[in-house]
Length: 326
Image 1 (cartoon, helix red, strand yellow):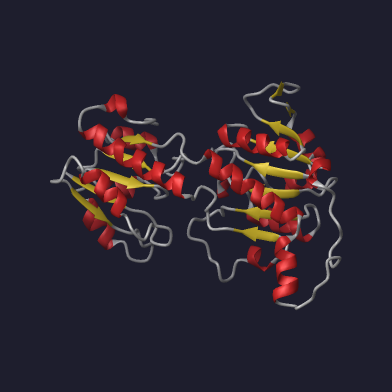
Image 2: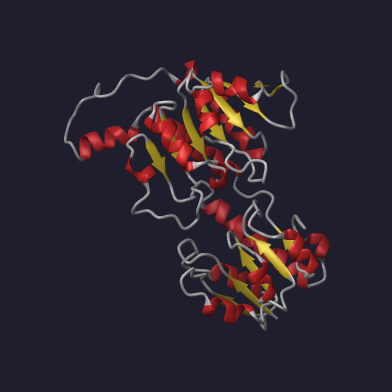
């Protein structure tokens, strides 16, 4: 029995000792290997993959090439909530089960969203540069902003994370409106009013994206959507999936003043070009390396659940596997 832990080398954990200990706790004979996925040199990855029974990954694109190269593979345990990178139909045809983690970082992502919102509105990036690089001590170097309690937060996607963000924003005195395909327009839940997408885009001072990545949501936030924000000129936050935002359209919206600024915890690629990316050259854009989920508590849950899924599956206790998605 062989388990491989793998992800893009740029984002793979530096130490998988916790996962190895969890997997081998009741199965000391199991072989557990860690193998980064290098886009430039994939031979080592495919060599390990050929006799792998279970694969633990978060972001690898599980496509025909990978599935064809893994004849013994029986389970893919996704160390994430999203599983859009996996060809589920092909996995099913090949008899490979797929499970993901339904809940482990709601509180962390919500806290991070509020942190990004405060950083944007209070212009912390600009003030830090003003003092540390330009050596200017001027509180009024930038236009004063309204208090948060006078601002409206618009949330796209009202799952667990969207609801947690709404609760925190409401505690700050903000008005919260939301758009969700699962809630009728005009519905009020927990003090949040559900509106149409167009109404949200024209009323929100801050737009926060928490939608899942689906084929329908690919590049949902494009130049046409940003044009609808131009009346209010809101701040834009994305802690969902990078594929939901057209980065070219976002850059056009920033440079033309359709939106005041943006905070992105995700980009379209999980291995982005950080040297030539124009998004990194704007004072009113904040980018973090897909870290909203990251805390001591979330990592402990992530490691435990993804490994327990593997153990339960191969012990013949599929009913204990958390969240089969195939």
